[in-house]
Image 1 (cartoon, rainbow, N blue to C red):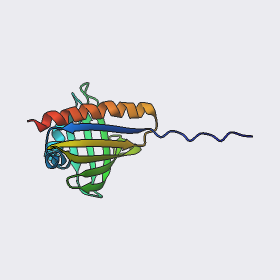
Image 2 (cartoon, rainbow, N blue to C red):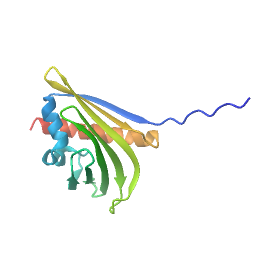
Image 3 (cartoon, rainbow, N blue to C red):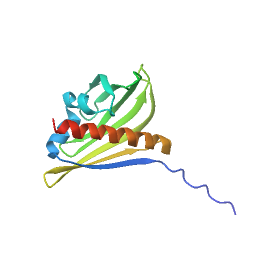
Image 4 (tube, one colour):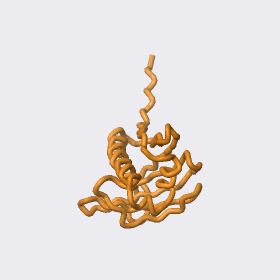
Length: 152
């Protein structure tokens, strides 16, 4: 008897944070460009270029500059926006010309919890656990930036 091959694991990422801010404000941080450009990158990174059409079917393209000066381009398309509770978009690393690598889907849900916001971020599917783990580090640093921006 031949053993059936096991299904290949498809790594996913889940992060939850309780933010000390109303859900409507957190939603605006994710959907208004003037806010996104101030917090939506890991610690020490800057955003020298960003453009986006934040609506279902709209796209975005962003350059994140690392502390060492290296540019990291990413882009995607907004799949779903339900104010003030859900934002879903594709996420793909790109070269300078906009050619994409592997694409994942990021879904951010916001739930009201005693005047605060329970943020859940889900990203799937990654090509490897190492890729997922790298994104987990980046997203956690980015969410740290969001928390700092919310208190300004």
